[in-house]
Image (tube, rainbow, N blue to C red; front, side):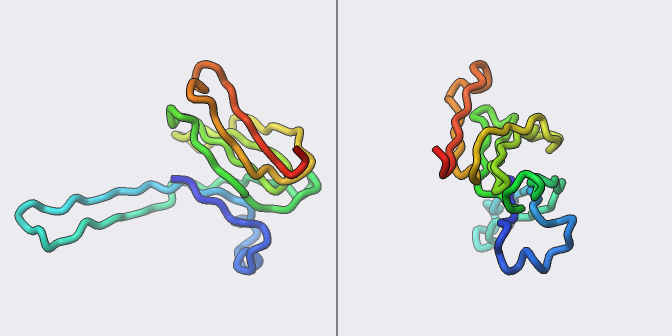
Length: 129
């Protein structure tokens, strides 16, 4: 799972600067109910695998993440930022693969083609059209 911090949330101003405008890759582990003990519920353990800075105030926007979408094969995810950019990341390493520029407002919509792993097609949207 991937989570992002919004740029104008009240809580964001209380975060250390290195945590503002970041995304976190979260590893989730679920434990199944035991068939011998049906009254024991499933549990979930989540740990932060990595944190990656995503946004730049220098681009004219704000620090924050507005959307995140995984490619259908799950190997890459795209993060739309309030800094008017779309960033592509590797799921396994959380390392940035590309920064795509072109919008003049926050990137608020992202969708991958069903065959994006072979076609590379990705659509983005923002208030600028």
